[in-house]
Image (cartoon, rainbow over all chains, first blue to last red; front, side):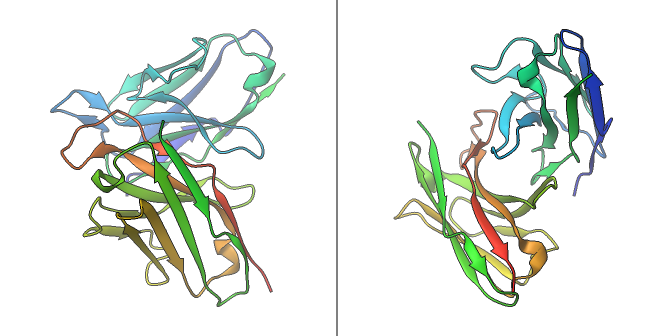
Length: 112
Length: 123
């Protein structure tokens, strides 16, 4: 299975400041036939199922605020929250869907 | 609108069995592969099993291989997972997930998740 590694494990950011989460895969997630990276980002709040934020590494899901953005290609990816809001406190997961499904270990985002 | 509704969760004893179901609607169920993903209390997300659109292809995580069996009934638009020889460490929320790609290879770019069903294994 492809191994997904996130960093950091936790992150404390002041309201209105930028939060950056990194995700590295053990092999490339780029499909050459369509030039898409099969990498998604999820947000999970306590007691709720994971919510899709970003797919194909950089496409924002409908209804997701534009302060969330995804970037990267191949094996290195980043989720950025440009201006942290109180409602963004959550655990964030990256997931590859190039083959079956594997997930990063999660990054807990808190308010400083 | 795509909907996935899991059911069948509950409490089982170690060594016992449970069968989970996932009813799909709002899409052509028979043309999509389906996954089960779980999350133990306070832990991360873990893939459990996959089944191809026609049931001919299954894949399991090492942790459940030989104990769990995924199946589907396309006439009922329903996905199943038979869980046997349950262990305490199988305690989790189990999510049903629709694959992003249909049987002809067309992709919408992202999977769709259900709300989950809770399985507790305890004596």
